[in-house]
Length: 83
View 1: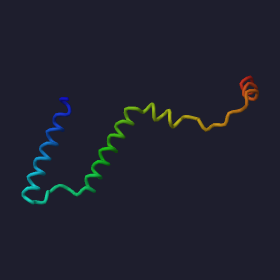
View 2: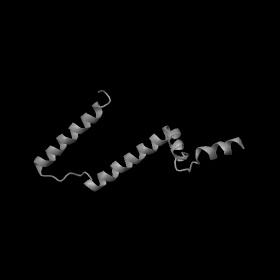
View 3: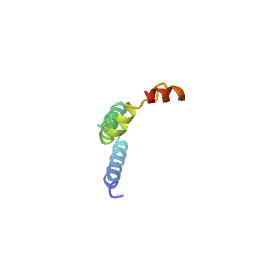
View 4: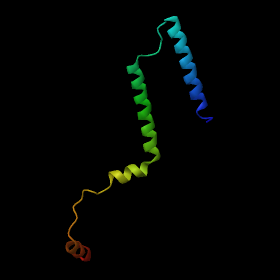
C-alpha cells in the first residue's frame, strides 16, 4: 500500500483542483484528452521495452521456434537419423 500512496495523493489532489476549477468556471490548463492518450502510449511502449529486455530468453525462444517446420513420417525420420 505504501507504494500506491503517492499515486493516490496525486489523484486526490488532481480531483480537488479540478473541482475548484469547475466551481470557478476556469478552463483547466491540462492537455486535451488526445495528448493524454499519446502519453499513455509512450508509457506503455517504454514498459514493453523494459519487459522485453528483462525477458530476452522468452523473445529468443519465440523467434527461434520451428513450429511451422514440416515433419517427415516416422520411417523416413528414422532412416535420416541412421544415415
